[in-house]
Image (cartoon, rainbow, N blue to C red; front, side, top):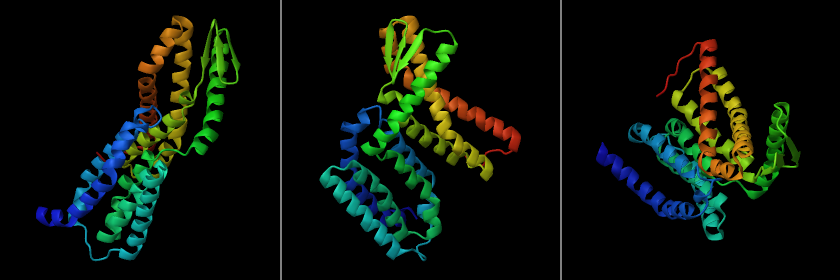
Length: 282
């Protein structure tokens, strides 16, 4: 069986390596080094790991009822997207082409049921795709406004000497700018990936529980990011600007993910008590 599997899949693996290893190298030297897309390698590794967990699908699936025509069309679209993205340096096309390339290739080789079982690991790669600037610009400013306004209101109620001018918070002798990185847009993106992976691994059978947890992911990400900004402002006020900047670079991301995971676990536990359902996964 192993030799048959190798004969079937080595051309596919070789083709994917030729296409995307240069892409991954370029990403590792550019956008993966920044905070905005630092989740990219984790998404890639998680997707590869999920494929490995489902490797029996690749080994045992029937090739009798494949969709070669549909798969060929999807694969052609993916290769065209890759060619345009690679040649014109459009990362959204180049990185996003992984999805139709994988989906088309598997549709040619495997039956529909097998492709569906591998659907989540393929679609999970969406979280690797860099967001277009037009979307980033449209969403970042409202998020910064909301975070800064909420921070101002909470600290004002608690008696802190705080005022706000747009997205600049003045607290005591210090000013804190709620920058693009503090908007929470990219943290929402990465935390959404983490939350969906969590649900995929646990595989709850209750559609209601899954729906409630999915709906909660973005609010949880927003709350976690708000707490990050709130703590940053408090650290700056009590310990000084230098301490605030140090906190931002060292601990802010850790706190963000810890808070988000704790909130997700707590909500999951509460829903488990109400709906009385245990995980079928892991």
